[in-house]
Each structure stands twice: as structure tokens, then as C-alpha cells.
Length: 388
Length: 248
Image 1 (cartoon, rainbow over the protein chains, first blue to last red):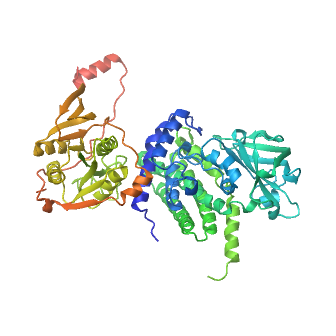
Image 2: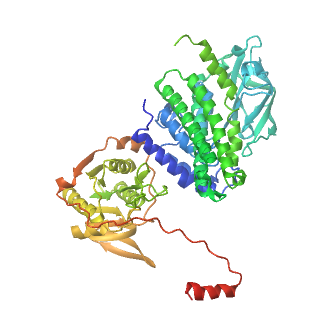
């Protein structure tokens, strides 16, 4: 039980913090408030630096060439990387490299050559096709997209919604029903190339995340060969379950980073701003808001580090991962909300990052499994557990 | 050729410093500390020399409390080979540090010493010069560019331009801001730094008197700027500059 970072972890934290402050934030000041990309030359320059730091591809498992660091350290660094305006969804504008989708690491050797490695090299971008108009939280029942057997392959028919980046991806991972009689056990995971006949992006869906947009996809007699089945037929949900659970931890960490950044701004502003002849920080109403921020941040941090530590030690962490995702996204929303309140009218302007965090943090309670589903997972654990 | 670099542990440059209530100094409790930025430039320059084959070993020196080891560790993570730490809880002024460094130089016999031109806490800008004097070595201060050959060619930042000097080795160099851009420590080097040795010494063992020669009377916050006024006309401005400010 040691919550203090080791001296190596602290050095890495300091280094990433400095990277964010000296490389990212000054560039960001010149970008559109809703930008999600750097200029290509800036991006290339920063990638060179993260490669020299040995931290490029930070989310890539070490066996696939990622840096050799444990999940606790990665979590501590993820908290640092998100502490800027675009940090919640594009930490450091991707300068630390992407990881690809969890499922693709479980692909067979042929698929790895065609999809995983090109993705890790930055040559191909994927999309993730799970959610459908009929729902996303309970995909086992909601998935209506069908895949029917035909000529050593499968014919896909159906649609997907809220899919990020599908119009710019070279391929995607698509879940479809292959056995109508079985619920969860009747879903298969396919890799679909974006130029496959019968697949198309039907429309763009705008959301409150104005830095990016989602898409709606259509599959119309879209034939893919057996070589495109990821994992086993009817075993779609078994692919990368462990990796998916792990993803909730950095997801929580990004929320914490943004909460810390918002809180720090609120503390500084409260010490500067005077109303009715006294500083905001002298007022108990404001002090308590700041204390509540502190409580929210510390709580989320402890819960998230606990989940990371359990994952690192290889002991069950499903419940902890659900809890940290739940707590960090909900408390992160409260912290940004309070910090905006303390800033008053200034907080709403696009001159400050608070309004972007406010909008984007709202999505965090829905994305990656909404709060209610996380609570459901924890409830199952509590109710299913024997006496401790 | 061995290169010795000095690294000072100072309050991090991002921290907004606060003067202690009793005005004896600035608040250092629970304040983030890091390596003096000018010393980072010194470390970077020494590592580049080693990478170019101009230096064989880079030794990082620091004097002060036990936590200075963290600062040395940072230099090791950047790429220095080993550390020397003179443990002392006393207030170390530039002359004391220069004397401690001289004792270490006598022991290690480096061909070059590189230090930051000043530390961002006391802004003394003295240690490098004092060390050169104590050693009787040549000195190249405010270095903007270094070139090692027979001696060391130093481009110095002086008022109004750059001055080129050629020094005989051994020499003491102090770094200016534009000498280089220090690297980020890399993950593999951070892991390796753990295994690199740090030798611990004391001023007593080195036979150096570190007693302060200067006494700090009082530390105060800079005065807050008074609010300005707006003038209505150029004539009024000229009048005020002449009669109130007395500058024209």
C-alpha cells in the first residue's frame, strides 16, 4: 500500500508534465479552440521527441513494441497527458502515438500483418463499429446487423451509429449477429475494409463534441471473406474482454487529468478575482467548492490507481475498473462544472478551455459504458458475492 | 577527457514563490523542486560532447541536503555517467560551492567543468568564476556555443553581441540560455539511472570550510506596482513626464 510514486515514476511524471506545458500548451494557444489536430510539421516534430523519450506508442503492449512500462505508471502518465484543452479526447494531440483497437491485438497472424502492424506504424486508421440505432449499452440484445453465410464468407446487412472516424478509416471492426437464436453467444466480430462493396458511411452525426463528429454506417449486402472473422464465429464478445476492461483505467485517468487542470485554474482565479471588495478565495462558498473539487479529484485518483494496481498485479479488477470509470467521469464533470462557476462569465468563453472540457466531460458518462452500466456491473458483484 | 557538471536543486521555475512570514527567505516546504534550468543546459552540453566522442565520462556534481540526489538522478537519467554528492544541510553560498567543487576537481581531474551561469533562486552568477579563480583555470562565461579542439572555442554572449574566445584546457564554462535545448530524459535512461553510482562526500571529509561569508538581513516581496492613470491629451502626457516623472 504505497500511493507515492517511485522516483522513476516521478521523473516520468515530471517529464510528461513538462512536455505538456512547454510543447503542447504554447502550440494550442494558436489553434482553433475546437481543434483536434496539430499542424503536420508540429506533430512530426513532437513525435520525434516522444520517440527519443522512449514513450511513443505508450498504450501499445510491450510485446508489440510499446514501451516497457506497467499499467500503474501508464495511468500516472495518462493523468498528466490530458492536462490541456484538447486533452480529454486527444491527449497531446496524439504525439504519444495511438494504440489501435483492443480487439485487433487478438487477431490471427495474417490479420495482424494486414491490420495491426500497419495501424501501429500509423499507416492505417480503424473505426469501431458496435453501437446501433437500437442501442449500445446492451449490444448482445441490441445488435440487429446480421451476417449470413455465403460462399466462404459472410454477407452483412444493417447499420451502425455514433461511430467516430469511419469516414477517414481504412478498416473497421464490426460486430454482427451470426446466430439469431443465441443472444450474447451469437455475435461475431468482423474486420471490414472501408472500400468493401456494400459498406458506406450514410451520414455524419454532429454531437456536443464539436471538435469531432460521429458517423452512421450502412451495410447493404456487404460480403466479407472468412479471413475477415476476428476471433471465432459467435465468439465476438469474447475477443479482448480483458483488454477492454483495462481500457477503462486510462479512460478514467484522462478525466482526472482534466479535473486537475480545471481545479488548478479555479484555485488561481479565486485568488486573483475580487468581488465586493474581497477575493473570491476569502469566501467560504468558494472555498467549499474548491474543497469539493479536491475531494472529487483525490477520490477518483485513489480508485483509479487501485484498479491499475490490481491490473498490474494480475488480480481481478473488473469491479475496480467499473468503479474508477464511473467515479472519474462523474466527479470530473462536477469539478469542471464548479470550476466554470467560479470563473463566472469568463468560464463560458472559448478563450478558456473550461467550456470544451465541460462539453466533452459530459460524454464521458455515456461513452465506454454509461454510468448506469458500470453501476450494474458493481451491483452484480455485490449481490453475487458470498460473505466476505 | 572527463567533464564535470554542476547541478543545483532549486525551486521549480513553474512555482509561484512566496516569502516566508518571518522574512528570512522564501517558502520551500511542500514546494516542487527541480534542476536549475541553466544546469540542465550544462548537462546537455556535456552529454553531447560524450556522444560526439569529445568526452569520455560525464560526472554530475551537487552539494546540499539528501534530496540533491534526486537532482543528480535527473542528470543521470539525461545521460550523465555517475554522480558526486556533497551532503550538507548548511546554507551553501557560491564561494563554499566553488571550494567544494575545487576539492572534487582535484580528486577527479576533469578536463572541463561546465556550470550554469547562475541559479534561478539566488541569481548570484559567481560560482563558475570563483571556481576558475580557485583552480587557476581559464574561464568562458555565458557560453552560447562551444567547440572542442586543441582548446575550447567559446562564443560568449556579451552586451551588444557575441564574443569569440579560445581557451586553453582545462577550463571552466558557464552556460547561457541559447547554448542548447536540453533533452527530455528517456524511459530507458531513467531506468538505467537507478543503477548508476552516486558517491556521497561531506565538506568535513573534503576539508572545506563552508561557513557563510554573507548574511541575509531580510527577504521581501517586490513592491506591487501602483495603478497607472490615463491622460487625455498628448500635451498632458508631456507635462506629466516633465514635471511629475521628471524624465524629460
